[in-house]
Image 1: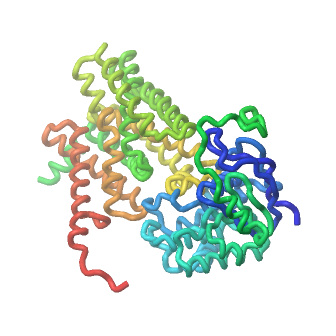
Image 2: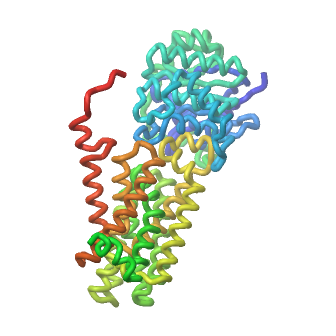
Length: 252
Length: 289
């Protein structure tokens, strides 16, 4: 399988402080990769770099000819303004952005697609509800419906099952497996090790620096998990420039 | 007689007809912008911007007296400079826009009042601070109508990215680069409509015909399209009723318009179908499902 995503000694972070430090490796096309690690390990930062929201401090990420806009991204839902007066239907319809753009109308075929996506996540009947009235689980289902419509070759999920009940998690996991079966590349940041071991063939264990990356059984051992736990979360305000690369000059 | 009170002022006097046309144009352009200001939690940013246009308008006044065209041009230049600076600063540093604007608008207000005082009288100052829609000439009315038209056209272009950026900015950044330009265009529309309102309502009340109707709409609709329609209608009704009130009672036109809008706002807070107080106190029996 050819590589879909390549990380070349990439360092991502904020204000020159690395949150993901010197990550190298590649994700093959059609991979189902779990990204695991403690809070503050850099999982979300890695995804933000991947979808182009955050520029690398050093190194590069290559997407094998894909535009960052061909990646469907599920952020942690805290970033959504749930008080905004928009219906579930209209919100989900933004998943068709690549075909509708600024002015494209939403005709009969598009409406059918939206209905199908809502039905696939079990939200039929919620079309006209405001997004502010949804429960946490319904919100996540709605976001998955939008991902379905985005129909992207790469899907990046940031803690998709956080604070979600077992039934909803199981339903949404089925969608993830369906994407995998369709040959899409899926990356998901997860905390539930049982779920990762049961359903994700490949795992990247991250603790600001990559601890292990490979087949899940080998990546998640007692030793690697212990090593990840020892990660130091705090930024060192007086840290010197990283010796492994001449960071300031490469930051641009 | 209802006819004498409600309609005769407009059939008898050309300045009342021009004023009515102006408030309707202001409502069409300003109210939708006000709804977005409110939903993006920028209501007070609009107020700050209204003060920021004052030094520009005041320099226009200094150069050519109470010439609305010169004051409009000056206001537009000052407003755009502030809007773009504030937008660029907050986008590139992560500083909240209201924070960067707060010191700025106080400085602008002080500067503007100082510039007007150099040449003008207290009457001029009152005109600048509170406007005078009844003094509007044909040329100014055309400028106001033109600005409202531009607003609606540009809003149609940026509507989709503006909505998505308001509700889910990260998503927009992953699917489109339109977010940044749409935000800047929106700030430009805020300025255009403030300058428009400035003619009629003055620097202190210009934002009133944008924000109050948006606040009213919030109590009657859960949907952004509905909100925009309600905001436009309530702005136009406030404008008409305010003009009538002003004509019959000699209350200055700007404050009269804003007071009518405020009365509708209070009514909406009490009786509005979406979160109104009465509705909250007497919600009716709960439903089965």
